[in-house]
Image 1: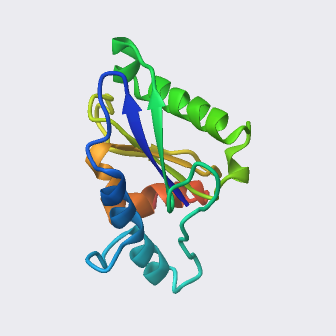
Image 2: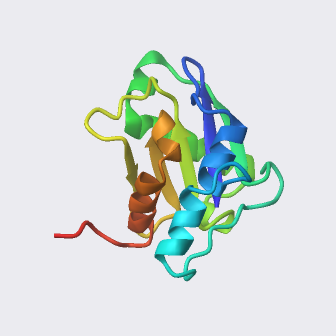
Length: 153
């Protein structure tokens, strides 16, 4: 799993790298986080591990992206910009080769309008509006879509 902190021209994710790492993977002070809750809920069938490798800092990546005022307001455009930056950073056009889950924490100026996160089905990508990135229940919901699960009726 990779957590991505986004620094755009006009705005950056509010949480620091350390706060994102703690909120997703936990630490000695944070036992309620995405990792613990996903593993508990799945009876340890889903194990959340920090990705390692070049450009990955203990499960977290920070990307700098140049954006215009109109781009930062468009959540879909910002998603595309972030994916392009990650593909460049990791020199791949298939981010599945980098990590099973890639959680992208967007800056507060990105306009998510009526929701706080979204994810693609059968994909490693999920996107969160700023501080919602460290809400375990929201993380679990969006990652469920990555696992091809829809909403309950």
